[in-house]
Image (tube, rainbow, N blue to C red; front, side):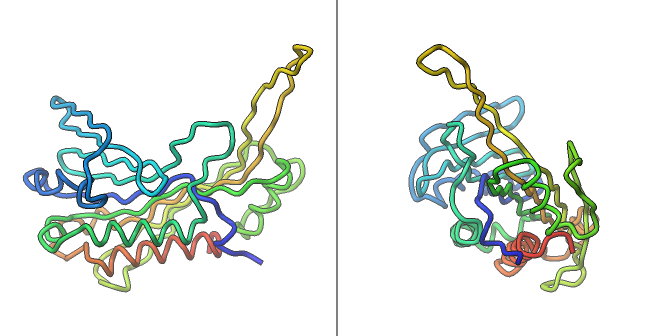
Amino acid sequence: MLSNNVWQTEQLRFTFFFAPEHHGLWSDFWTKITASEAEHRNENRLAGQIVEQGTWDDKQLVTTHFRDRLDVVIQDGNRAFNLPDIGAFVETADLFAARVIAAITAPLYATVTRIAFGGVLLQATESKEASYRALSQYLPHVELDETSKDFLYQINRPVFSEVNSAIGINRITKWNGIVGKLIEVDEQGTGVVISQHAYRLEFDVNSAAETAFSGENVASPESLSELLALAKKIAANGDL
């Protein structure tokens, strides 16, 4: 039985697009989320880019400001061999979305032309074959067997928003199996290769570019929650 509870989270991201003249209104978003100053801040004036990052709720929080866009990302700051994991998908996404939504005021919503919610989810397995068997349950239109290799499946299944039917929503997903390898040296100096298998879902649910400048109100707490709900449905049901 499929479930969105099996997924561990590598990364989650909210993206907000706006006209360049509104860039300054979004400049302190790190503080709005955390009620503190970022641990690290890097600015590239030529590129019009500011990156702020640090630890939030035992995760690495990164906000990247461009002239016309803000990316808000949580990810695993631990670079160990183990698969990245910042928590179970549903609980982590709910907490992240609630904090981001709480940080956005009405004047900020009014500046937004497009929104997106993206993420990378993983589930560990014991082998490539096990990863492909699991992926087959999420991808009923795809045939995978024991001899399949180098599998990568990407598709966009657009829908119209139920919050505002004038706005199209892209549901872009990418599915694949992955393997990480690490060489450990034992006491005799012999290298031992350790493999770690998993299957992977990368998603990007976003308001379509065609409606970005339609005059429609694309951003609201309800529209952000809708993107979250669509992502949960993908994680739970697969490519349907």
